[in-house]
Figure: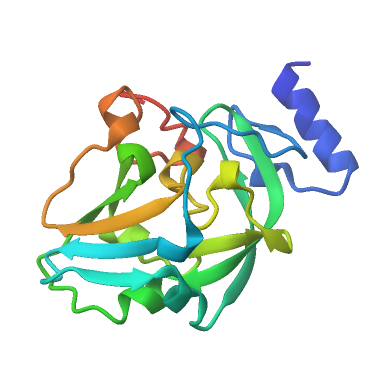
Length: 203
């Protein structure tokens, strides 16, 4: 019996549907820490999120203003390109769609390029960015996020590999074209669907 078949059998024994786990993944109860570079120093008092590009003049939302908005709490599975999956994670924050509703996004916008501390970037089609389950989150499993997991604000996009869920997100630029981000320029797939194993170029 292969490693992944054995893992599927173990999940069934626990009453978990193995189809929740994408191919090539294993389930962990840990929350591994993976990012490029050092964990950046951040100051919650001055932290903000900027929307730019095709939405017109930049719109800057201080973190305090984002936290004052209606909160959403959602539970879902997350999947890392390094092959771990964590089930039933609970996140709290502001729905991406609620915040973007405050902007005037033109029909010409098709993609976003997200920026974070230390210059990290990642791309998404606009339709994926606006999915109702996506959050700008600052709480995880009932507690504030750890700094190493993206506090004071991270994007959560659960249907794609988790490198698209940008930690320490600081900006979203609306564009009329796709543009590879940091990992996409360095060999990762432009889209990153876990259930299609879109890990790297050519997958």
